[in-house]
Length: 118
Length: 113
Image 1 (tube, each protein chain N blue to C red):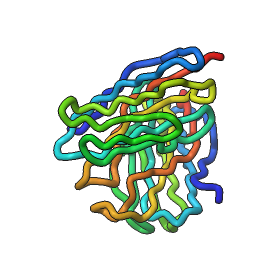
Image 2 (cartoon, each protein chain N blue to C red; image 1 turned 90 degrees about the horizontal axis):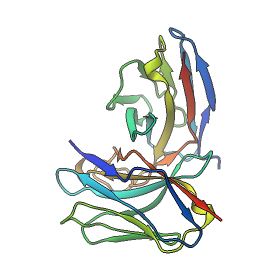
Image 3 (cartoon, rainbow over the protein chains, first blue to last red; image 1 turned 60 degrees about the vertical axis):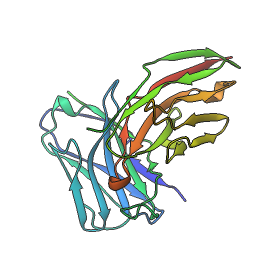
């Protein structure tokens, strides 16, 4: 059981380039999330998904796109990278639970991708 | 809006010292409160939680009590070890919107032998 995996671990992009951050989970979780963490700041939610085929914007979605074609995978796409997107990106997932939205309290996080745009 | 403010770091301690990390929150309604920990090179993992006022969460020697009157959820450990060196995040989740977590900025703790 690998949990939540993210690739790559590190990446340097030039301004205007594009890339996809990969995220996969093998726990059959319905909810998945993408966060970014800037230095000295808390994690900010970029996008989330409540299940395959369903995605929605979080607090800071501009400059990003996501898709969820399977339960396991939730890639994050950066188009036209900008220096403001330099950050550490975390993917997370939640199992089914008894909460109002049917998800549990705990989120399971991947190890993160450190992205630098220069 | 909902937010979490936690004590700025970094915090450096000697082994067996007492650790406190302050966390206060602003939220409408009655949130659930969490402490997540990130060890070097790893993702965040849930350390403890409390879902209603006066609840105490505890795990691995860490404790935090949900104080509604002071809107606080301070993390404490009586005797830290080198292995407790990590970044600690306070977070909240609203009961009616419980797929989203709001995080504090994180506090880096280093414990020296």
